[in-house]
Structures are given as structure tokens and as C-alpha cells.
Length: 182
Image 1 (tube, rainbow, N blue to C red):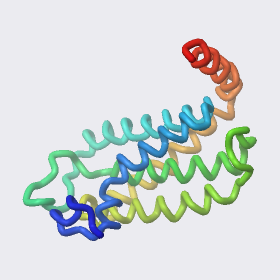
Image 2 (image 1 turned 90 degrees about the horizontal axis):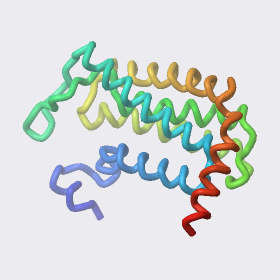
Image 3 (image 1 turned 90 degrees about the vertical axis):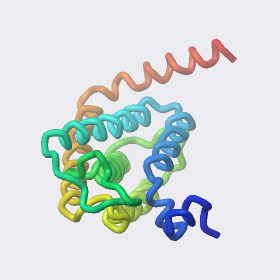
Image 4 (image 1 turned 30 degrees about the vertical axis):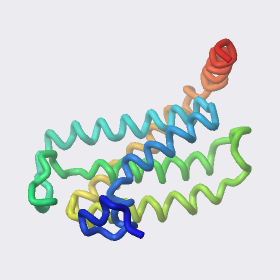
């Protein structure tokens, strides 16, 4: 039942999937943006990318090594703070804020509770998996989670503080562009 690569690394399938969360979450986010056609969803995804980039920059200043040797070699990137933990915490926090304060987009089912109940335990599992997989220490994951918790409300406030007024204009422009080519 395990994936071939998972067997090669000796990981159970569920831990192998958690090790590949960057590709899984990125793909699902891209599908979400394309499905909704929402400027707000695109803004949310842009925030995730910016959160990731700023954490990677911060890592170069902190310069704390990762905890162990993985697959016979130490990863060359630094570990403090954990990028995965920061970004997935950004996801959970932003989704929670959006469900609390934003109107529902017409392309989405009218549920404000389900996204939060899915995002919070998934984010926690993904963040903790960074320790289970040996990629980070508890302090590195904790720092990443704190970073995501601080970044998401700031990014959300920019949207609700005025950038959201441009959302319908952008959505109309995209729709007219897409309909021009179809």
C-alpha cells in the first residue's frame, strides 16, 4: 500500500505524504484559486508565497542548522524558523480569519465552520510532522508557527483595509480576458 518512494525511504505512506506537503498544499491552493476565480483567493495564495519567501530570508540571518542528517547527509538549508510550519500556520490562521470576517464567495459552498475544522488539525499535523521527519527541532517549528500566526493577520488586515475593493475589478478583468480567448 505504500508508495514506491515511501518504501525506499522506509517511511509509512502517511508520513511520506506529510513529507510531500509542499507539493500537495501548493497544488490544492492553485486548484482553489483557479476554481474560484477569486481575487481574494489569489491574494491569499500570494500571501502564502510571501510568507515562505520572508521566512527563507530570515533563515539566512538566523543561520541555525537543521537537527540531524537525513538520508545520510545534512540538508544544506538552515532550519530556524521552519518554512513549512510558518506557511501552514499562515494558511490555518488566514482561513480562520476569512471564515470569521469575510463574505462568502459565490463559487464556494456556504460553510464558515468546515474550512476551520479542516485547516486547524491539518496545520497542526503538518507542523509537528517536521519534527517526526527529523527536518526540524521543536524550537524551529515553534518559531515557524509564531511567524505564520503573526504574518497572517497582517496580510489579512491589508486585504480588509482596502485592497479588497479592487477584487471585483480584477475578477472582471480576468473574466473578460478568459472569455476573449474562449
